[in-house]
Image (tube, rainbow, N blue to C red; front, side, top):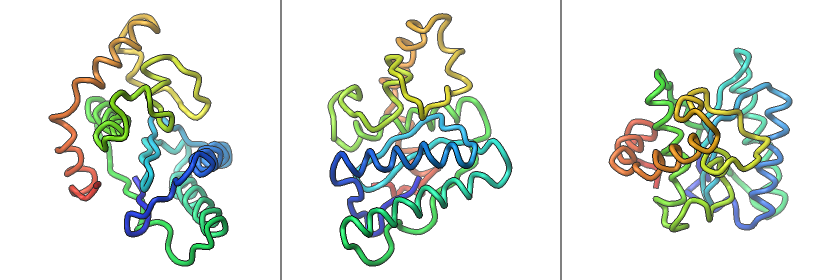
Length: 182
């Protein structure tokens, strides 16, 4: 997770969202990294990623955030820090926690009141898992195949799994981000 400095809006239009996704794809290719879940919000981002080789995660994140910051500064004549502090990089130890974090990430637009249904939000990996939408950024969650025996069953089970969240969101907000997400 990384947030805009002073919670400023970083993604003010579709071009900003698209630039970030393009940058994400470039960094994924440059520093081999698996992207399991993502969600871009107006003032912060969530990524559930895994570096394929040791030091690549820090290089990946530096290239991603620094590159977007430079673009944002030039585009908006902004001077100063774009990102608020270092990105958050919590350790995820087991399958259940991994899936909970993925759900937390993809429910973000719903919790923020931006949409009433997650299908309405285009800047996340939700469509890949819930509806089989093509998304070249996404590397399938290693636990996703266990939620159903066919694509249709997995998608249906995933939609159900996402819809049951709520009680876990506050705990994850505390555990992962110290309760300071909003």
